[in-house]
Amino acid sequence: MQRILVVEDSSVVQSIVKIALRRYGCAITYTRDGVEALDAIAREGEPDLMLVDINMPRMNGLELLSELQGKGMLPRVPVIIVSTEGEDHDVERGLGAGARAYLRKPFRPDQLCALIDAMVTA
Image 1 (tube, one colour):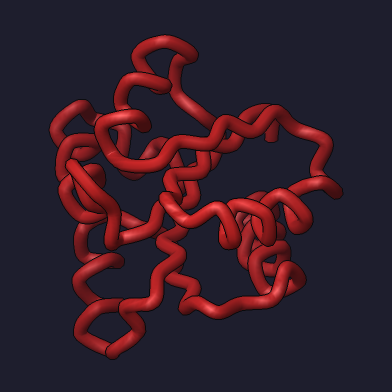
Image 2 (cartoon, rainbow, N blue to C red):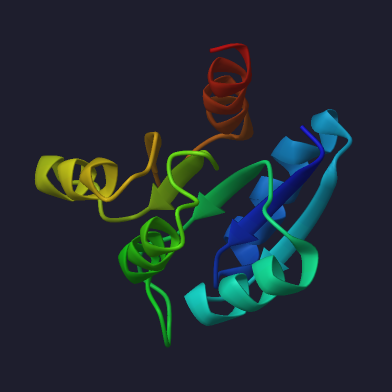
């Protein structure tokens, strides 16, 4: 894994993600919404993994997944949704939109790493 795109508008969650991802030694790009994420992808190319929040300004995570589907990036680029929206129907909606995993906030860094490790070895 060389590059991870984190699409998250909370600086607190970005800090937790940064701690968790340190062990992978990869490049990390942080964006605050789906519009910035699409700009980053156009500028830097497809990431190896994406972490995507649902509730964000301008373009939310589900709208971003729809855009990625339209561009043919899913399922090629694995996506983990990281969200406070944690009801069963929210999880089903996120996975149905193309995410490979769903992590409810709040989470511990080791929980995120376990999901990433499972994706990398799968």
